Length: 88
Image (cartoon, rainbow, N blue to C red; front, side):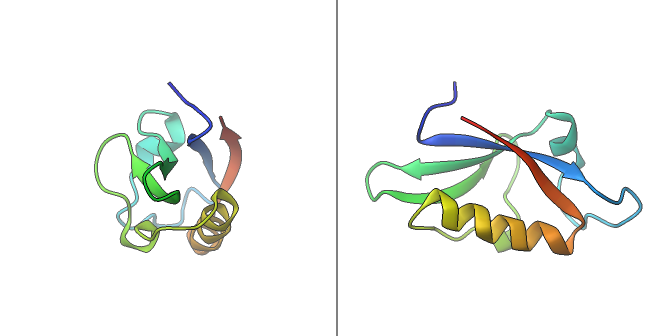
């Protein structure tokens, strides 16, 4: 169940020929969603995968969802991935 404190980033690979490195390709099919979740104890946002580990570059904490999304946009731009949609 998705709530105000849990948002799913729907990702799209712009160039299928480009290497994803260690990023899980199941994310593009909806089989392993990338969540941005707010920890209610400290109000910090972080990334979570439904299965497996979040890439090291996304393991930071952020003071707002917008800051987390901005960081993700920059990270994914290098990998030819774009955030197509945010589900609440």
